[in-house]
Image (cartoon, rainbow, N blue to C red):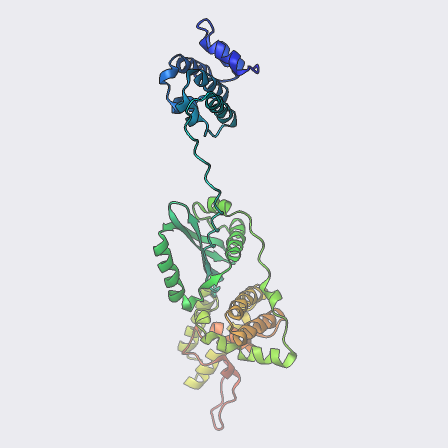
Length: 397
C-alpha cells in the first residue's frame, strides 16, 4: 500500500482509465469500496452524507476535499462530526476554507458537556443458608443484566459431593425484591441470611472442585456460569475463628451442647441414615427377643444398644466431618449474635477432634438418640436395678 495525498487520490478516482483494483491496491481498501467512491465522486452533487461516511477513511477524506470544491457545505457539516479523525479533520478544514471565502456555513453542533459518570449500581445482595446435618447448604447469587433484569442463581453445595444443583433464571427488579424478601422470611428455619457476595462465590467454586473426586454429576451449564463469575478466593477455615475457652468454660459449653438440638438449625441433624437403620434393626431384635424376662430388662438392653451405637458411630472420619460442620454453624451463629450457642457448637467440635468419648458429649448422643424417641435414654443403660428387683440374666451384646 502506498501513502497517497488526497489530491492525487482524487485524480485517480476521477480518471476513467484507472481500474478500481489499482486504487484499492494503492490505498489498501477493498476493490468494491474503491469503485463505490468513484461512483459517489461522479455524482457528488447528489451524494448523501451517510453514503460518504461509510467509506474507508482515505476515500471519505478525498470526497470531503471534492465537496469543498463543489461547495457541498451540507456534506462537510455532516462529516465534521465523524468519529474518524482523518475524515472529521478534512471536513472541518473544508468548512473553514468556505467560511473564509464568505460562504455561509452552518454552525457545527457543540459537543455535549461531559457529564459525571453515573454512580455504579450497588451490588445486589447474596444469601446463604446454614449448613445442615448432611453437609449441604443453599446459596443465592444475583447480578444485574442490562436490558434484561436480574439474573438469580440458586445452588446447593455439599461438603461431600460438591456442587449438587444449580438453577439460573431472570427476574424483573420488582420480582427480585419480592423474591429476596420472601427468601429471608421463608428461610428463617434454615438460617437464610444475607452474606458477602465473595463468600458465596468462594463456596460455589470450592464445592465444584469436589465433584470430580466425589463422582457427583456437574449441573448442566455450571462450568460456563462459574467461568463468568471468575476466580474466587479460598474460604478461611471457620475453626480458626474460635479459640478454646478457659478449661471450665469449655467443659460447661460441651455439657450444654444438647441444647443445640433445640435450635431450628439442628432439628434435622441425625447420624447417617444407613447407620440408623442398622441400629433400628438391632432394637427390633431386642424388642421381640425372649431372652429378656420383663420390660425393665428389655428397656435396659435397648438403652445399651443406643449407647453402643453412639460410640460406634464416631470413627475418625465422622469426628472430622461433624466437627467441620459444627465449626461452620458456630461461625453462622456468631455472625447472627448468638454467642452462647456458637461457643457451645465450637467447643463440641473441639471435643470431637480431641477424641472425647461421644457418649459423654450430649450433642453427639442426640444424633443417635433422637432418632429413637421411644427407646430409653442411653444414660439409663448403667442405672442400677431397684432394690428387691429379680436378678437379671446377662443379655447378649
